[in-house]
Length: 240
Image 1 (cartoon, rainbow, N blue to C red):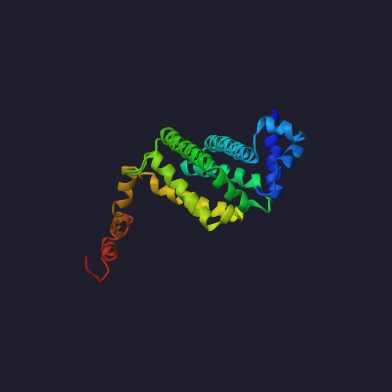
Image 2 (image 1 turned 90 degrees about the horizontal axis):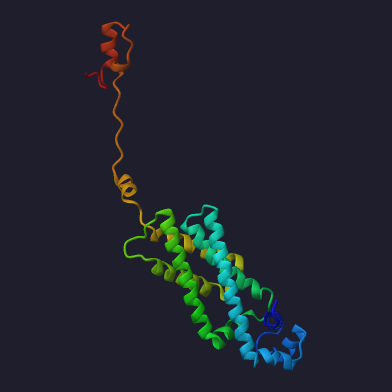
């Protein structure tokens, strides 16, 4: 672990414990086992340190996404399984990073205030990664997207679904309920985004064939008397 990584890990613990506003460079330096001057050699202010913590979290979340998507693909998952695993891995990583902090709402708010550019940068990176996954899986599994749908469009809709779920669960808590509802949304979205093959669509729309009625007379043994066979072979109502 590099000195910078050690400082960032220590700073994350401090921010989780005290929130952004009540944390200080001195606290971060002490947690990292450094003097204040030594920490300033790497990060010039608390704001710069906080932004570096956020950037590191996003980078590790991207790595978690990639690993989860690869694992789901190797397990034979469909497009929905792979995308759900990918998105949930990112969010679980971010949730776990601040889990147990009494200042989680403040930290999320400050990260949007002090790191708006970072948020936009990594939002684009996450979207690009999802679009790449869609393209790879469709090519590998020979899937076609619905008319008017592209990998980039589906990735954008997935991000919109995620933000919609976040609006119902402030700070993504409770995590289990948030992730469960988001998964249902994502699977429904992906199901509507994949085109149904024409052959399968034709089979679904074709009217069901009515089974032919079997006449009793054709299955009667040849040994029956002709008069009895004619009687049994008559149609309901007594007509032939």
